[in-house]
Image 1 (cartoon, rainbow, N blue to C red):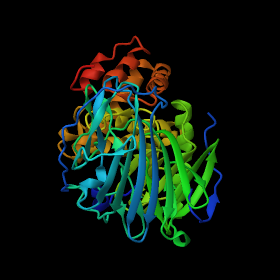
Image 2 (cartoon, helix red, strand yellow):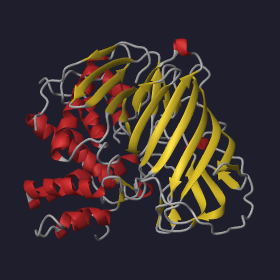
Image 3 (cartoon, one colour):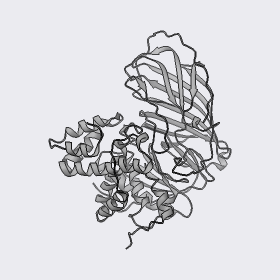
Image 4 (cartoon, rainbow, N blue to C red):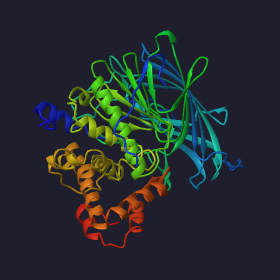
Length: 495
C-alpha cells in the first residue's frame, strides 16, 4: 500500500524520541497551495544589599514588555554581540525590588559573557549570576504598573550542536552545525512572576522547562561580512534597512533565528500570511510537502480555533534530531525530510501539523511547560487528528494506530516533565493519553460544544499563561454534561 510506512529499528529508536514538540539575498520560489480548506559552570558576582526607597513611577506606557536587540553576527566565527534593551512594565500587582532574568546560553560553559547591565540608564553591579538565572537587585521599588528600563551588553560564543545519545541528553538546537546557526532562547528575558515568585524551572533532559510572558520584539541584525551573509529565517516580519535587517513581532513568546548559506527557500501566501519553508539541497520534495502541509494546517486551525496572529510563519529544516516550536517559527528534524515517502502518512506531515498547532497552543495560549506540559502538548497532539479529519479523513484511523496507539500509552496526563520516568513514558502520558482524553471529551459533549469550548478557550486565554484550572473552568462553561469520570480516568489531580 502507498501509505504503509516501514519501521527500520534504528530509525524507530530515533523517532520515538523526536515528538514535540526575510531572508538575505537568495531566490525565493513562490508556490501556489493546493487543496486548502475554504473554511555549565558560572561566575558568580556577589549580591550587595541594596538600600530600597519607594519612589513615584510613571504611568505604564506598555501593554507588554518590549525587547530591542541590536545584534551583530559573525557567522564564520560563530559569535554574536548584542546590545539589548528591555522595557519592563510591572503588571504583577506587587512592588518589586528584584528582577529575575533567564540567561539560558550560560548553561554552556564559556558561551555567554555579560559585559554590562544598566537600570534606567545607570550602570549597576548589584546582581548575582548562576547557571541560567540572573538576579538583579534594584535601588528602588518598581511600583505596580511602573516601567523600568534594563540595558544589557553581552557576547555569545556559540557551541557546536553535537547530537548526543537521546536517552541521556535532549537534542541540541542552540549553537551551530557545519551548515546552520541556530539562535534559540539566546537572549536574557524577564521570567514570569506568579503567586509571589519568579518562575524559572530547572532544565530537564526531555520536555521544555521555560515559561514565557508575551512580549514585543525588535531584532536588528547585521553580519560581519554582508557579502557572504547567510539566508535567515526568523520569528519576526523582516524589513530591510540601509545596513541591517529589522525583524519585528508583537505578543510573542520566544524570538528564534536560524541562518545558513545552504538554505533553499519556498514561500506561499495564505491570506495575508507569508509561509516560508527553509530546507537543504536534495530535500526539496520534503521541503515543498512540509510547506503545503503547514499552509493547510494554518487554514484548518484558523477556522476551527481562531485566527493566526502574525504576518509570517517559517518552518525550518533543523540540522539535528528534533522538532521544536518558537514564535512564528518552528523546526522539523532533518530525518523527517530524509524519510519522506511522498504521502501524507508519515512523520514529516504529522509533526509539521503538530508544530504548526503550537502557534495556538504555546504561542497564543501559554502554560507552564515544566509542571503542566499536557496543556499545550495534548492539544497539539490532538490537533493532528483535527488536521487529518479535515484534509485526509481516510487516514484518521491510520493516525490513531500509528502515531498514538502503537506505543500503548499509559499513565496520567497531568505529570510534570520531572515525573515522567523517561522520555517515552512522559510522551505516552502527556501527549498520547492527552489526545485520547480530548477525544473522549469530544465524544461525550459533542462536536458543537467541543469546538465552541476550544474557540472560547483561545479567546479568553490569548496572551496569557493558563493553568489546568483555567482549562476546566472554561470547559465547564460550554457543557452541562457530566464528564467527571473521564477526568478521573486520565488525571491524577482533581480539577
